[in-house]
Length: 388
Ligand SMILES: CNc1ncnc2c1ncn2[C@@H]1O[C@H](COP(=O)(O)O)[C@@H](O)[C@H]1O
Image 1 (cartoon, rainbow, N blue to C red):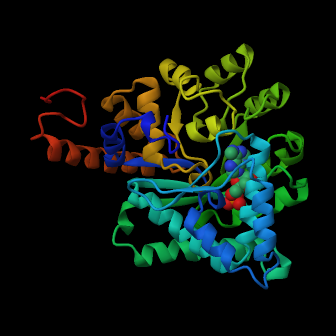
Image 2 (image 1 turned 30 degrees about the vertical axis):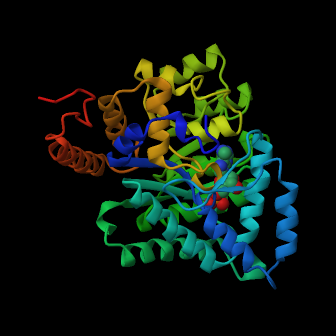
């Protein structure tokens, strides 16, 4: 494999996946920061709570994670993680990112840029998640943090010619470091903002921290008030917690890398849709390789699965790249990739009528691609030499 990972799939596979209309259901806002923006924001830190030398020291400290700005053939310099790191080291990197994204302006900008990047990658619907943060020293409350996110979304729609192409909902994240009270604050905020585009709640953060029982009342509250809930589970080996989360029956679950036979059977019986992030899980060593990723087994049984990115900035990926990785690692045909992308509409936190409309919009886009490619001797959409 090349250092940029591109040799994991063919250019044709990537081109097909880029042309496919896609749905992103598991993307963390700050983890999706453009590396170039991260670099730029870190230059502007003088006078802010963290100075540039301090940031550089922090980055050096996290060199086990490694910052490598590698020129990719068709992209701007991209941040890649070094060959070996752990999930714990990854969370040190999030702390660094959070220390350079402390202002409302930074949050607004990152939100706009993330949507621009998604639209350019042919993402037609996204549920973007973020942890609302109160930073009194910046005059930032959880509410004003979210206002900045909403302004970023508005900026995107105001500036983009492709605005109609991407529909966005927000999920508010509870960080596992947070107390029951903090979690409940976030749940209340999510309920208040239900009509403003907040579709649900997420539980995320370092999986080695905290206890499931701490945040459960907040998740119960959100559910009782009509919000959907997705939970990170099984990112590390913690069978008691994973069983308790499965018994609670979230509307979707992220990761589920570490399962024994009993948990796997419970998950299959539950039919709860899985948000799967190949690069993230391989990079953080939650799974040993792409080929060994549990996507393959769950997809083969017909269990609902959706490919997602997790943190495009941290793992130097895009949704098209994740689809191409899956195509190459699991031998998926173009038709299987198309069905995978379309099926994700059913797992969104939209109302059933909105889900149907989204799927129809995607099917129409796929049809246009089929027609556009029908004169080509090699059909992009059925992997045959020609299609009838
Ligand atoms: C790698 N796998 C992962 N597992 C668990 N939580 C993750 C994560 N990747 C990201 N986050 C969560 O998202 C935050 C960054 O975005 P926001 O500041 O909320 O926008 C991280 O601090 C962590 O809490």
